[in-house]
Amino acid sequence: MIRLILNGCNGRMGQTIARLAKEEPSVEIVCGFDPFSGISNPFPVYADFSAWEGVADVLIDFSNSAGVDALLDFCVSHGLPCVIATTGLSNQQKEHLTDCARKIPVFFSANMSIGVNLLMDLACRAAKLLEGSFDIEIVEKHHNQKLDAPSGTALAIADAISGVLSEPTEYVYDRHSVRKKRSPNEIGLHAVRGGTIVGEHDVIFAGNQEVIQLSHSSASREVFAVGALRAARFLAGKPAGLYSMKELVESV
Image (spheres, rainbow, N blue to C red):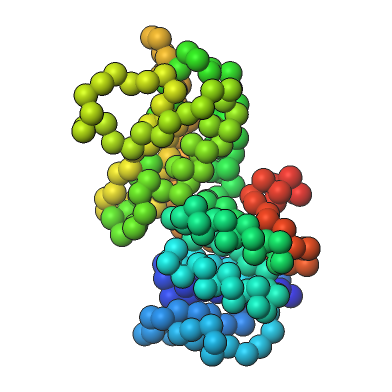
């Protein structure tokens, strides 16, 4: 039995994970952290970390990027492995996360969906094969309550593609302010916000007289919750280090 702490338990993703955990015999949520009350949970919920005293095996974080630094410090002080599924982290926060991973096991992924990570792998293969003759554009769509743009997943896809190309790339987020032709080394990133779109990501390779498009669409937040629970089971008992969906997939 893996004992979980769920940070952001009263949010949409937190509630989805809590519901799925009820059906998972190998997982027990021992408590939740959330400053927002008014939702009844079958486990105790604390407004801040300092109020908790107990034992847990892994913490899952689906909250807000503003609180990630304090959360990481809490996990380090308690020797608690953590799954960070919150997006929109700054470069400084990512450096802090890497530093904490030298002391505790940390699992970080911009997207917990197995399908999205497969899309990323395919995009990298395509980018390497088509380099120099195809322009690359990434379009992501999310619900109107999402705070960060472009999404952490879109940036992760761009970073992965950039990492396999032989020439340096430039990320372009907005074209309306500068009137000039597109540079060959650009990766365009475009964010759409509206309605209740769970998450869609398209990677477009536009060449001479042909277009190749890789797409992933999430119909439910459950795909991310399932991935987070798998990550928690994977992380339990691991030595200190920074882990990602790549290691999880390779372990299957």
